[in-house]
Length: 160
Image (cartoon, rainbow, N blue to C red; front, side, top):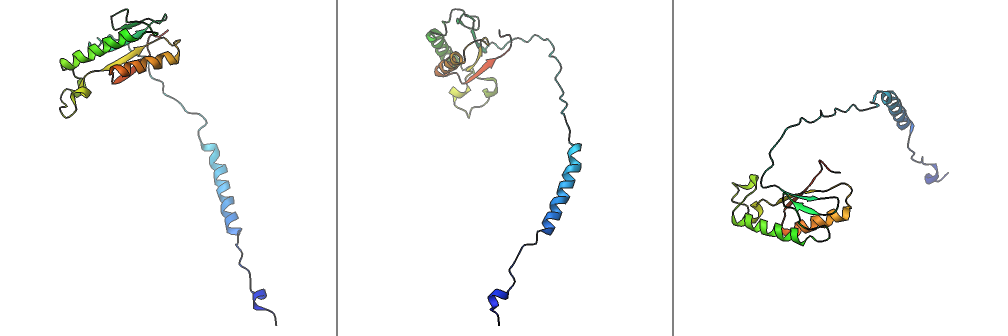
């Protein structure tokens, strides 16, 4: 008599159904592949309509000229990129004056649950030429943050 361990059947996996499923999936993908779009059609916006909008008098725009001089709105001679102390002191004084006069942001006028310092209009935009070094703009942003500016934006129109 033979040993029962030797005569028992070893389990094996029947892969025939798996191969059948894979072949069916391959055929489905081969049929569906030509149906996918080859390009996407983009809808481009229409050119902007020229309209004149009066700027908000509370908007602060720091303009950097090609020679590195800085102006704040209509105030010229606010220093240079190498010396930002004059601009910094002017913005600190301006923000303190706005705090004393309760000059709130438009969306925060009726929000008495927010601390007053967070409600004051301290948004500053930077307008600089594209040829300006990235490090100079980053240093200007750091200086503006140090003065208390809470939102700093970059203005992109009309740059050289």
